[in-house]
Image (cartoon, rainbow, N blue to C red):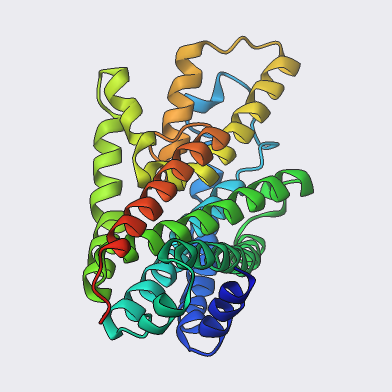
Length: 300
């Protein structure tokens, strides 16, 4: 197994795919974090009646966490594509044949690839976290910047999200086998179908239907960072309310949570830890389906 893992690392570092997708990932993380914070959108949240509660001022809330989440959620598209393209390129060009013939089993190959691309997902996450943090620093006023603890928590959530998106892309690539097909389906879902469907479900009057949004792959993936940020912000709001002696109704909190998840780019998101578990399930499902397809795939 160690030999397979070493071989997979050599494969990734001897091609240009990893850095060709890392560059736009870094740019996307920076631009989205900067644009969201510089737009003044987060500053205006404190002026909205749904969040005033009716506190006199919410300037102590670190709204800058929202641009950080947006940077991660957009940029995580690229590690997903990296995982998908790495697998489908080998399958379509049949360069994976030698690996399958020399490995103990195809399951061992998928296992080694999963370990390697989990690490690559973390590498992408580290670069994205730096880029998004710089974008946040450039675009946000100092009062909106998060504490070190809150920043680390969101970055940790972002690293997990990038790793799981990479594994989901890898599994989906193994299932589809076509680079063009995998890219079109994944991009179509994460950029168009998923966000629209999740938003529609979130506004459904039936609470049980609305919960589906956070359980979908896109909702769960974006909810890892988005749900974490929303939980932190609502905790801060409730802390201010306690100091002010204000009682916050559940209806107000639910409305605040709804709006904040939309602004964070994760409509209907569950709490961060729950989104991790749900999205882990989707990633494992994709890897399992990819392995089953790979078992019967003709590689000659």
